[in-house]
Length: 264
Image 1 (cartoon, one colour):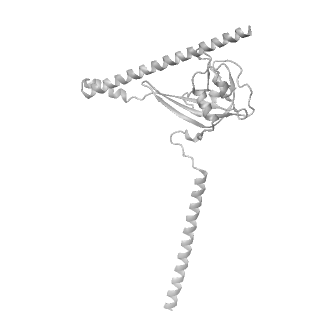
Image 2 (image 1 turned 120 degrees about the vertical axis):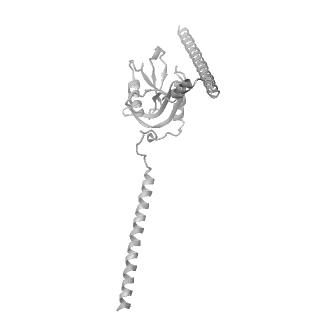
Image 3 (image 1 turned 90 degrees about the vertical axis):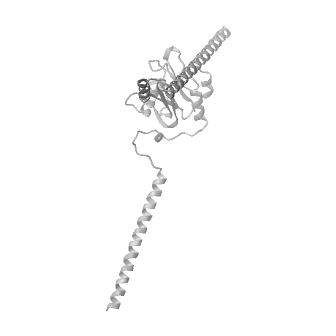
């Protein structure tokens, strides 16, 4: 009976993998078809514009439409690693009842920053508080109707670190757990990003400072060593200025004494 149960589970897993591969192939084919249609339509429009086949009012309307801003949807994604066990946090999604495993994260809502969204989504989906340590990557994808931008953060959990991050199900996720990269490969993942980014962190690849992402008009952070060098150069210039003033005063005093000597 045990062998029968194991074989049935294996068959179900193989069927799930086949279904996921089929769905991925269909999505890739649909995306390629849409991209080719968009390219063909743009080519036809350019040809029509160049040969003046479109009436002036349509050409003007087309130009105005191209100048309209394209909506951009922003997302924060978090790669959280356990500081002692070197395991990574994954959450089980409830979207469309597929119960696939994915990185904690979500769309940036109006009024929120990328950093705030990363902290909020990790707590809601993973059940733990984290501290952001750096930025792994910033991605942007442009589509005919919109653009998408994703920021991948590296984070670590705050002490004390729970062994089971989230063990209840709600509208945010079906739970979360710490997994190694080897265990991750055997899970039903929504895509390949968890393996890619967790492997990147595990390999010791560079992680960039959080100051890389800032609001427009914010002050640029200066390196402390540069600050020290600048303060030293300012002190040196000040000392040189004072020395030159002292030397000038001495020379002036000597010149006056010589003039008085010959005058008297």
